[in-house]
Amino acid sequence: MNMTDTDYDLDTTEGMNNAVVWTRNMFSLIKDGGTWMVPRSMTMVRINHTDKVATLIVGFAPDPSLRRVIEAMGWTVVER
Image (cartoon, rainbow, N blue to C red; front, side, top):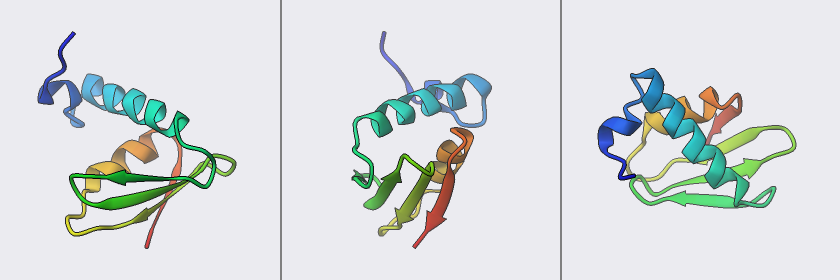
């Protein structure tokens, strides 16, 4: 199945759910304390699985959708 931009529209229930599932899968690939670099914004996301905290080290193009999706997962977001 090919996904389109509308499949990840965070203003729809289905889009937000798709984004949450995708991000959970991404987080599951990262070790506790590891970092995910988000290419579109050059933001680093440090993952703390134990406390469910994602620390965003914001890059050149802040992306508020990162916070929205991570918080929808039930995680706390800290920005640096």
